[in-house]
Length: 126
Image (cartoon, rainbow, N blue to C red; front, side, top):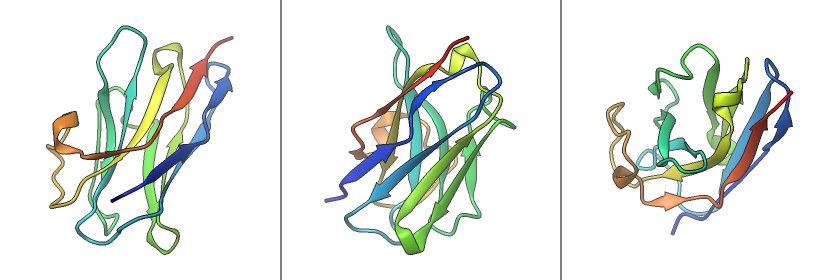
């Protein structure tokens, strides 16, 4: 099992920043890449960013590239999503995800990720 606990959401004004955290209290290691997804009301869950165990390999959705950064601290079994220059289109519930297996920047569909956090709400509003 890979229990994930994500947190750090809140309400922020456009142009503001938030930092999400995801703690993996279960199995970790090179076989457990991690990712962030988000789901806005009435929309499908979409890929935001992913990171391999080493941290050197990352991938981002075009909509967040240059504004969001995914980082992992393996000593603390934690993955972060630093979100800057937020806008209204970033409003969504953000979910941490993990998979057991290899990492690929092409793994951007939910079907590649088996384990999920409970979600944390991010609202960008004036």
